[in-house]
Length: 359
Image 1 (tube, rainbow, N blue to C red):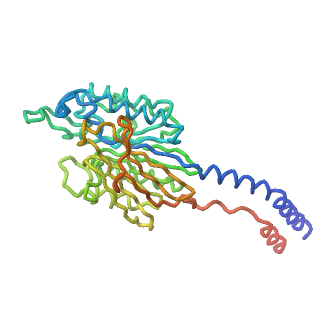
Image 2: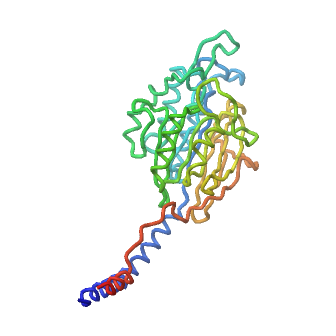
Image 3: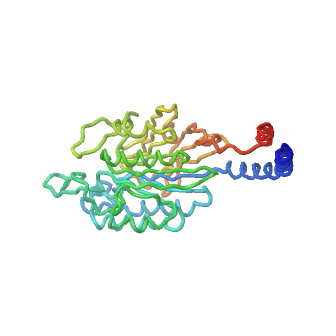
């Protein structure tokens, strides 16, 4: 009864013979597609552009700064094709003091991207828990987790988008995850609240663990300081600081490669090694204390798969100029040629020969 097995062996040999040219052509096409650079845009701490309640932006003497928020999103929209922008993230402190008028400005500015560039946002301390006070600011921010964010950026709106993955709370958008594909790779972004609670980190651990074939980015507001160390402060608001987030969540996952954050004015980079030997680039960018509350400064990160490199650029669309210092323009090493999860083993002619011997 060896003849059927020999026929199977011949069939596999012919299949490989005729399929090889097609596979080579497909590999060539896939390689060309995979090598195409793409971009993720980053906005940080736009609070002064929406400053209606406390009016702290008056210190620059020119009042309404909302135009800079629109400069940012309009530039990203208008340059989507030029830079192959696949996604935009906002690092939090979207508004100044959780005021409905401020959120209306933020909604209008971010809506510029609708239908062109997908995006997600995380909450900063200025985005929640405002409490009136007689202090010099007229109030305190971040005293609790109440926020108008969900009214102006409702879960229901974003759940309709193909990039939407889910949320920690089925009725709120405070903690969310998104996914997209670029250059033959799958990416996952987990957007976490300011000082995320333990239960939120448990949820985030589950999301990243369930997607080992996705390259994971964490988006959270307060994590890294300007001195290139993770935050270690004790918190009035129940939650986790940057070091606790690293220990409880970020370091645990092989597919984790980046953390993006704001909160502290300035720029910083800390690259740490995760539990699986993977390099995790933790990046701070925040321009709120520059002229006019940031004056539209933003970041964009160009992923270059063929070079296994991510190029970081810091740009001002209002002034049409770049920051070129070592903390503003730099490259990160990141392997993109090797898949995160090995591809399933394909049948080969030798498999049929083994079957022949068993027969």
